[in-house]
Image 1 (spheres, helix red, strand yellow):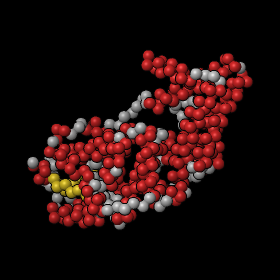
Image 2 (cartoon, one colour; image 1 turned 60 degrees about the vertical axis):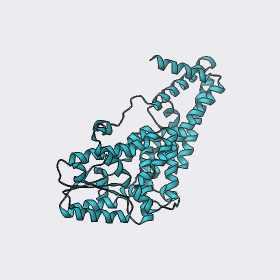
Image 3 (cartoon, helix red, strand yellow; image 1 turned 90 degrees about the vertical axis):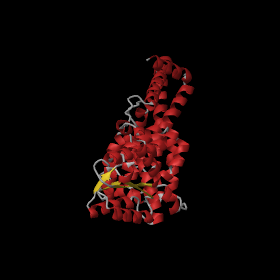
Length: 394
């Protein structure tokens, strides 16, 4: 196939010194008109030393706290492996770019935007799947594992985790590997019509898939499909939130109507405390500022009644106001050698406080519903059943 002769795929380990040397040698020998690298624009800028500022308030407001932490743990895991092998993650990509500039070749960024990949992955994972992933990453961040460079030459760092991801969700490997293989193959095939010879530097785990798609270009999905990030107007979480709201309001209405004002005040006080205490306790466990903890305590009762609000939004923003992080704090998150060191980081603390507040609020919400329904004799099963029936009719 003509494209295969024009495109030379180099499979590398992202943290292997041997890969860096191989990339330099092949580019020097082949003298291509273009060098393609497994990077998107954002990662390229980071490798070149241009880090974009992180808007932590925006992360909290959009509810992307756990997604951001997930990406942080992934980056930290890769950096940890790089420290053990003596090579910075992505060094072979950076060297490929530098070598391309030395010989006057164009640089092609062929990978899909990382934020799209991570959002598509995040949307595929269920709540407990995400918890298992966090456990896996946190464990990998701070436990000493024996890592063989020879193993890394067969799979890059991200691909090393694909087998673990497959156990959690079969679609995970499809998003992390297969879709990106198709995306990069498409970009290479398009570039081959413009350049005489291309050296493409990709993770070893992607090489076989890219070659397969290049041989069978008709199997490459439509570009719009590969870039689609679902914007769910009605999610399972939001439906659950509305069910919770209707259930609690029904309980309060029943208590006020049948048991009187004094019992209503008693029920409201119980709801306030049951929601506020665990939210405040979890915010405190996350190392939150006194005012952040106080905020979590006072807003939890209200945010639990609204599917559009989260207690962590408020405690996180207050934490941001009390302990404003610098750009250096965000960069230092990747350099933490232990959870204790990470815990002291102001940027991580803000996200951790917001996330933990939400966990405490969720616990309080479900316990509060159970407590009110049992204490005041409300048949919670019947309420939920009727609510679901009404939703089905809609």
